[in-house]
Length: 234
Image (spheres, one colour):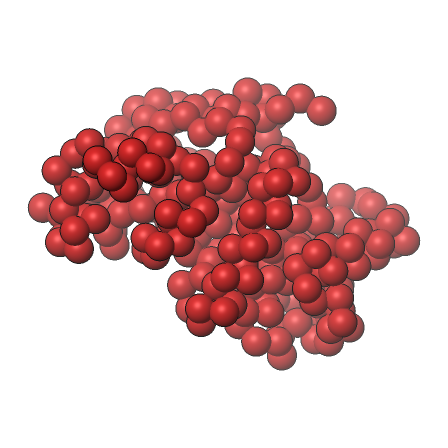
């Protein structure tokens, strides 16, 4: 299977009506360890993921994959939608759409639920599960598709510390399994724990993309330094 990475954005902009939402998104996302996207509210984090995943069409610039990404990427939202069916059926649903046989997709769904620690509740309705459990079902559902890249938009924002750490462990396992993780977060501790590299956005622009150690120890822009200091970037 040809790799769809790197993903290259060059001078990407997005305008909605007269409002410029993103400007000069220039960035390369390569295969490997997780990339974490940070920035203040309204900086363009969700917009960046939506553009990468194809949920938004740029009004300028280019977005180029190394090969056709169809079927090889996935996205998990902050509040994932659960179908009115069991946790197992939720995880198997994407495989069903791909035409995978019932037996095979059931085996894969059971395996992914096991890997996120939920095999014991496979037959429970997904919509009655806790927020943390639903988040893990969403990850299992994405993992079942074996994506080369997974975009996550604030997946732990509404979770308690224990559920957050459980999700982080799953993301590490997915990364070890070969999936490129690209995730937005406001949690700088989480960014330190998970990120190999950090993308910092400010007012709809990519202001910095650096290895995590360098970003946190010596941010390259005054806006990033202010953000890390807990000040609102100007």
